[in-house]
Length: 443
Image 1 (cartoon, rainbow, N blue to C red):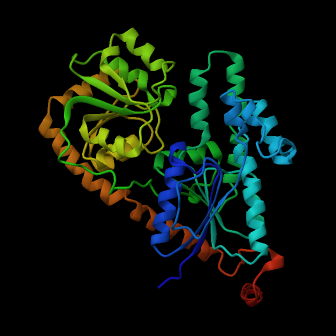
Image 2 (cartoon, rainbow, N blue to C red):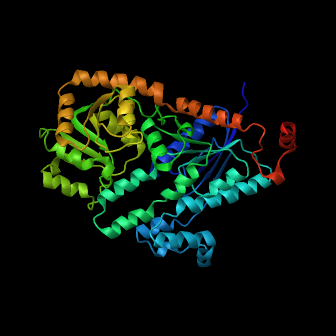
Image 3 (cartoon, helix red, strand yellow):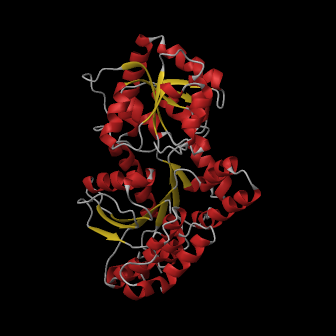
C-alpha cells in the first residue's frame, strides 16, 4: 500500500461564493483527506467554509483593496486595526496597483504564501507537494526554488476572460484598462515552470498550451468534480415543463445570456426563463428583456444558496447553457446530475461534456434561431427529456464525482513525487537527515 501524502493547497480566494476555485478547493481537499492524505490549506479572503478535514488552515490576510476600490468603498480601504498598517510593503503595493487598474491579489498572495511556508519549513514541517489553485503568482517560484514539487489547477487561462472583457469595452480607455487588469504575463511565466498544470477539459488544455505556452505533456485534464450526493434528482419535486433555467451572469459576454433572451422571444408565450444572476435593477438583462418584449417571462432570482439552486435544477423543464465559451460547463453538469436535460451551445468544453454524458443537445453558438429551435424540440418531447435526464445522471456519477476526480488527481501527484524521488522538499538548511542520506546515496 502506498504511503499517504502530505499536500499543501494554496488558493488566493477560498470561499465557494467567489466562483469555481473555492468549490474546487473545498471538495478536492475534503476528498483527498478521506483517501487518507494529510492536507494543509493556505488561503486568502474571502475565506472558505470550515474545513475540519484539514490538518491546518492558514488564513492569510489582505485588505481586499481591489474589491473596495471597485465598489468605491474608499473608507473601508483604511485598516481598522491601525491606519499605519497600510504602509506595510505588500499592503502599499496592493493599494497602488488597485488604484492603477491592476489586479494585485495573485502576486501579493503568492509572496505571503512563500513567507508562511518558509517559516513552517524552518520549523520542521514537510510537504510532499504543493497544489496551487489558479493563483500562479511569482512567489510560487520561490517554493520551487527551495525544492517543493508544485502543480497548479487552471480551469481556463485568463486570456479567455480578457477576450470577453474586450467584447464589452466601449472606449479605447476601457480597452487599455482591460489590458492592464489581467496578470496574464505573470501567470503564463509561472505556469511554464511548474511540474504539472491540471485543467478540467481538453478544450482548456489546448487553450493553456496555446495562450500560456506550457508544454503539452505537462498539461493534464482530470475533469472537474461535482457533489453528486447534493446534486441529485428528487422525484417528489414537480417539474415545471415550460420553465427554462439558466445559471450565468448577463454582464459576462461569454455566458451568452442576451442570445438566450433573443431565443426566448421566438418561443411560445407560455415558456418562461428563470435566471440565476444579480437581481439588482441595474442589471442590463432587465432592459434587454423589455426591449425584446419578454420582460414578463423573465424571472431573475439573484444569487441563491446552493440548496435553493438544486431545487431550481430539479423543477426546471430544461436547463439552457448559451455560453460562447466554457472551460468545463459546471451548470450543465449540475443540471444533468439532477436529472434535467440540457440545451447548450457548441462552444468551449460543452461538446466534450455533453458528448460524454449524452444528456442534452447542442446548437450553434451565437444563433438565437438555432437555440430556440433546440429548446422547442425538447420541450415538445417529454419522453425524450426523461431518457436524456436518466442517462445523464448515471454518467455524471461515473465520470464527475469528487471521489473519481480525487483519485485521478492523486495519480498525478504520485507521478510527480516519483519523478523527484530522492530530492528533498525542504530548504537546504532544514533538510532532514533521511533526505540528506538520500542525496548522498544518489551521488
